[in-house]
Image (cartoon, rainbow, N blue to C red; front, side):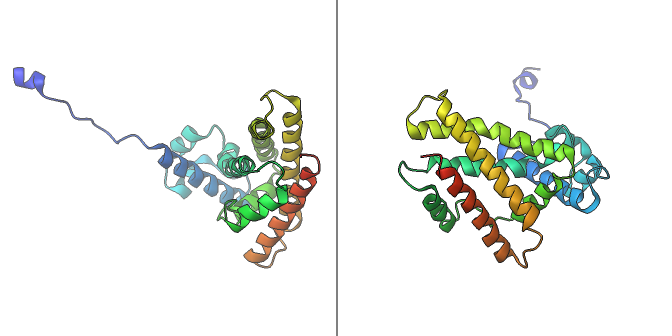
Length: 216
């Protein structure tokens, strides 16, 4: 009895997933959802199909996302996070387009990443799918305070100052307009990936140039 009481119990079941692994699963679900949305439409796509495409159960899909439309959120939010980091590296008095060119040369913005075409297809779907449109707009709405905080720090202003809030709103709207313009007008007509990349880069650069005229 004494030996039994002193024996250490061993953990049972699977070990908990790391945050990195959870992020990988979320991104895999997002990519699978977009592929299915593009090929067969949002209405015809089920949680079971999304899970099967990734190798997980529908229950796992719903554990990570409350709806099938929300499955695409990681693809939208990843770009927002990159832009926030981009703004943190924007030095005072530095032209915004100059920083953009530097980041692009260093591949920091990852504009040629594997999700570029996926996001382009997804943004095109937001034009006809209200559920996806809501997720797209909500992602940008949630990004705006983060942009405002970065711009306030850059200018040495309080976090609740109105000026960086307005600047962030301008910046945010310009980025969304640029990505939508690319997705709706040029992404489908680009003959190859390199051309598509150049077109997206040029579109974003124009948007940043317009923003820089009002954010100094």
